[in-house]
Structure formats: C-alpha cells, structure tokens
Length: 123
Image (cartoon, rainbow, N blue to C red; front, side, top):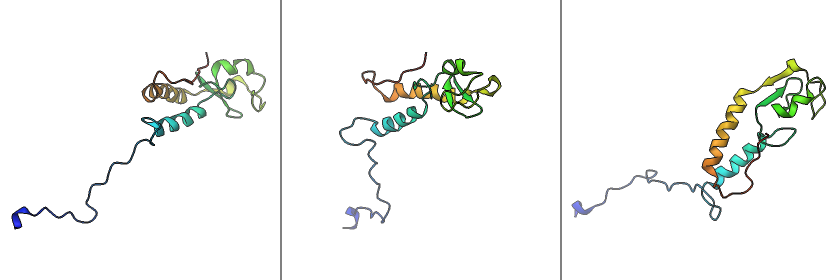
C-alpha cells in the first residue's frame, strides 16, 4: 500500500538530540557556573584578592589593583613586584570595570541567593 508509507529520512538528516547543558547531579547551569568561577578568579585584585573595584593598572608592571588598594603605593612601588609606581603610570581601566559590572549581573543570574561563597568586593 503506497499511501501508508512513511517518508524516508536520508542519512545524516535525522535530528540530533540536544547536547546536555549540565552534568548529571550537579544542578542547572553547572558548566556555566564553573566557567564563571574561573573568570572571577581572574578579576581579583593583586593586593586584597577581592573582586576588583574601580580597577587601575600600574603602567610599569601592569599589575591590576582596586583604586583604594594602590593609593598608598603611588610614589613608592608596586606591592607585588616593587617596580616603581608613579602617578603618571596609574591608568584607570574603565573597560575592565564595565566587564566586572556585567559579571556581577551574570552572577545573579547563574547563582541562587542561597549559595555561600559569594564574591567579596573591595570597599
């Protein structure tokens, strides 16, 4: 009976199952959270180790600090490598600050309010 035949699917045209977005047993968005946690580690101040707040870069060595953390080092040296740090070498990194603000918003989306270990911001 030709009318009852199912259309033949050509090889390679079968829909693939959607990839799993999370490993079993770790909760929703586990991969995204893990990647985000790695990113946050890179956004930490070289001095206070909190998430950068108003990040500035020392021109001589390029270490990045919160503006409050480095203010007492101007005219002396970098607190990490002791390279001389002069006021004209300090550069405000507004682009990095914008990224940090976006990461803060993303954290609110990825993490429940119940999770402990939320990042500390320099104050």
